[in-house]
Structures are given as C-alpha cells and as structure tokens.
Length: 343
Image (tube, rainbow, N blue to C red; front, side, top):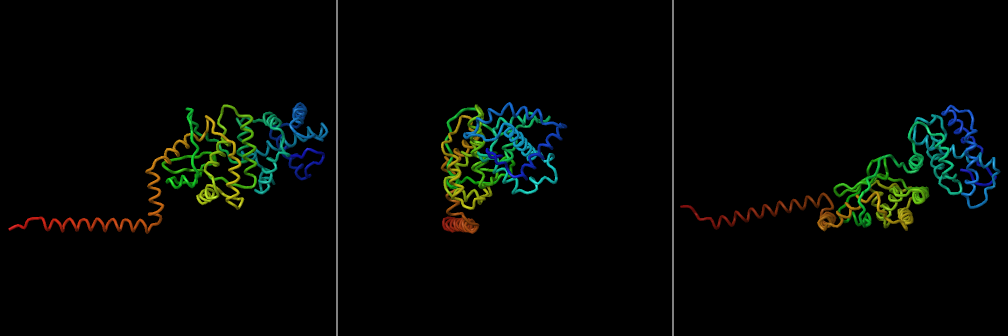
C-alpha cells in the first residue's frame, strides 16, 4: 500500500489506516499496539529482503508502515467478507469506485506488503471464527465463495475442450449460472452453466497474482484459480468466442473490445498445463464425450441450417402433415382399385 521511499501516501489515506487500526483494537478490547509493533520488528529484516531495490525507510518508519498497511489490509478484507463489521458511514464502502481503486492498488507489485506480514497480523487478530486469509483475499477480488468444486480422484488422461464456437456447433448450449461461486462450472445434459464474470482493467492482474500464489505455495492440491483461467483459455480462442459468452450473459466486458478480452485470456493460459488434480476434469470428460458423438453434431447442424426460426418448424410440420395426408389419400385410392366389388 505504500511506495518504498520516504514519500508517504496522502494524509487522507493515512487517516483511514489509523482509523481502521483503532477499530481493530477496539473490537478486540485492546488499547496498546505494543505486541503488534514487536511482531513487525521481528519480521523487519525478512520483509526488507522481499524487495529488489533498497527500502529507504528508517527502521521505525518501516515497522510503522508494515503495521499500518498490514492492519488496513486485513480489516478491509474482513469488512468486505463480513457485513456486520462495516460502519454505516465508512467512506470506503459507500462508493464502489473507491473500493475498486483499492483493489487495483492492492495488486500492484510496488504497493504490496509481504504476505507473511499480513498473515502474521491476521493470525494475531483472529477471532473465534475459523476464518481463512486466502479465502477472504480471493473473495475480495473475485467472489470466490465457499462451495467446494468436485475434483476427480482417479488420475486420468484429459484432453482440452474445444472453443466456444466449436462446442456450440456440436449442439452444446451455454447458459449463465446464478451461482455465487464464480468458479463452479457445470455441464448438465448438453448445457454448460457458467457463473458470470466481469472483465475489467484489473482482472488480469488479479488472476496473475493469485495464480503466482497458487504456483508457489500450494502443493498437492487443486489450484482453483489457475484451473479456472485455463478453462476460459480453452473456451476463448477468438473474439467470436467472447461475443458468444457475452451475449449469453456469462462475460461482462468492461474493456469495451472483445478482441482485448480474447488476448487477455490467451496470455493467462500460456504455459499452463492440466495437473492430475485438475478441478474441472469431470466437466472436461462430459463435454468431450458429448462433442465426440456424431449424432449431436448432425442434430445441431440440422437445427442450425434448417430449423433456425419458428417459421422453419411450422413449414417442416406443415410439409410433414401434407406428406402424411397425401400418403393416406394414395393408399385409399389404391385400395379402391384392388378391392373386389361386392355383388
């Protein structure tokens, strides 16, 4: 949150940081910051080594920065995740553009506080609730939710799914799912249900930061955000794919250009490989099974080329009825000739 030189952020934001620190202490019935200052001093040397260039803060100012910024971050994410912690007159939560700007500032590399600093303060101020820092952080940025995503236990060879356009040509439909967990993608009876995602200027930075964290610190577990980015990377191979998902309400394009969204997911998916615990393995298996059936492609092609409007259906059934009526008339005509006349 603070640039690492002697220039401090604006006085207004410093006031918000002190306000959040006071609210944190008040909620915990504490009047002193001494134990938190001691904790930050013990991490000072380790924290300084996290930055490529020299940190020009004096020891006292650096410790103050770690404490203020760290407590501000954990209070922000707790208030975002728990409505009951917010004050009715909190400036930050009164205006969406303020919160959006804060999210953007938090993910800038030059503004970041080492994660172990935030984690230490988070642990020291933990309440009776079994809250988790990572879930709070992800919820702040992409509304992660709490529902688990099914992961196939059996290791199996997976094949990447085709693009949105190709899947649609095979008869697969795309629908927006109103599920609160944006990562919970389902495939049911030929319909892929995907929760909506707002794509803005900060989306790529958010994804990259979480993906880096998953790569560095999560072992032997599903990397949900990385897998989600790869899933969208497979679906989006052109601006036309973006257009289809946008028209279905799955993507909200705040960048203004479908081509930009395509290139963004293309960059995010570069050099990502599917792991054995890929969390969308079950979805991939069902989609590829549907796509591989020729009957589905034939029916989809028939609907697209011959039944693409209500009038086409009316014409088809009208012709079918006329054919049936003509056939019946022909049968009765033939029977009238071959049936022997009664005396």
